[in-house]
Length: 110
Length: 117
Image 1 (cartoon, chains in turn purple, yellow):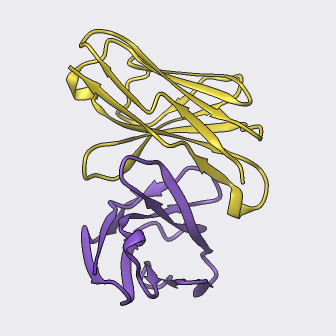
Image 2 (cartoon, rainbow over the protein chains, first blue to last red; image 1 turned 30 degrees about the vertical axis):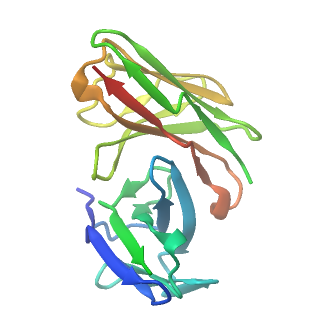
């Protein structure tokens, strides 16, 4: 079955770059997403990438996709304290049904 | 951008009672809505997919008689947790799908924290 995994925790200093990693098993995934969840809140779509792309950049966010290794990463440049949250990667195959990763808690300290 | 309103944001109830959670798309018509459940420190798990005017499709392991989903209109879906028990305590999130460009494809509600005493 489909499985999406992430490391549980990441701690970075303010101003540094953060890299959150995600691995998935479903090679038929068409879209891959990154969502941000702040405490007690719903999910906010940060960015997404089509499976035929290798990289996508959106302001401070850079998504890298290695389809061969089924590895997805999210890089946040110049990480700020407001970036502290849980980040979920998710995959889907031509549907709206998302399979979420386990979530990575990003802690930014001054 | 599109907004999904989820209500209530927090509910505390006694064991054995039923709780209804509403999910509304405020400025768009959502033909499909999804209900997720999140346990503490765990990922989101899809519970069911609901399409307007038809029965919901439940994921494996989700009791449809326990979690009643109604999608009566293009802007409203409800999840009713029937005869709630402490193990039903969780964070429930709905999402609504549009059919526009991918970047605005899926919108999430702000979630409902259910605590069953």
